[in-house]
Length: 395
Ligand code: NIG
Ligand code: FE
Image 1 (cartoon, rainbow, N blue to C red):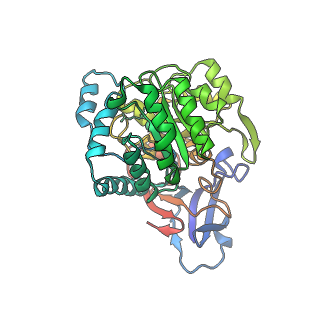
Image 2: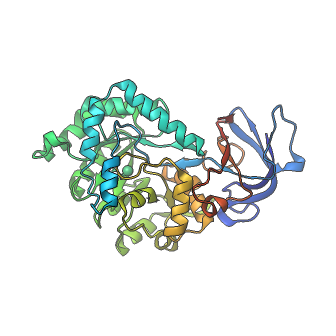
Image 3: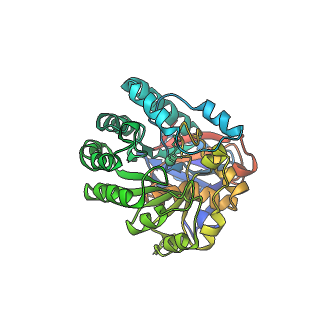
């Protein structure tokens, strides 16, 4: 039982105040066997074996980081320094990480995944999606996903991250490899398939072919889309009923209309079935213009925030950092950003048991060192996560 909560963000729309955040004051949450079983006024709280006193602080659902690349070796700090001295980001450094990842042992990769997973958890992330994409051989993609699956059920096959150097002049052959033996070896460990659909990576025809193969194997679709320039990725994602199109930095009106056209009614109000997942850590770290979240929200598109944690374009595991960037740089209100980092991430993973605090939800919650969710953006860079419960277990 967590009691004496000053501000409880439930993300159950229509509860208390705060619109979609469903804020309750002076609340308590009862947890049994990893699930929320009761939410109500702290004075009415039923008896419980173990009580955690929130001392009037804010409590939120754990963050849902729906986009991260944790399986890699090495870092690219020098590439970051070069960018901050004026070099552009092209994605070309992905191949550097591919080389380091292939050369690493399973235990080295496992240690990195576990270190970053623990780092994220300390910062309040209780669900994290993990992509492969730095192996790009049948064996290296399969082991990347096997290791990712040891810490998360949300794993994504990204064999189509870039065409590896050894296939540079045979991209069609590489697409055949991804759709055939690589997908077959990866699929047992993956829930999702993703493609980097961008100039210099995969064009619309290749991306469509790869995503369709993944769908035929039962994987859900996500797309890296419109990061470095306008392109076909967002509309391809809508065409294939992607759960999420990610980055969305360069959008046309037609892209936004396509996303908005996927709106459906839900208990939380109208939401789009294809979510726009924005990754402000990438714009921060590549010194690029931020995506315009306001334009998406005003068009009725559901927005999620995620870290994109990877050694090249966004080496942060911090959802609070992304919330602060989204508020300051992308036109989001603090409430919209907090919703996008919790319930929005859950929608991007097509989950209704996380990102929300109501009976039946997973008991993933964070107690802040602050009286309100507003402080996540108001006090940037300050470690405000006092306590994390994951599956009801204090971490
Ligand atoms: O989401 N854009 C493609 N993939 C990653 C970056 C990978 C890298 O630079 O290593 C991203 O930003
Ligand atoms: Fe990414």
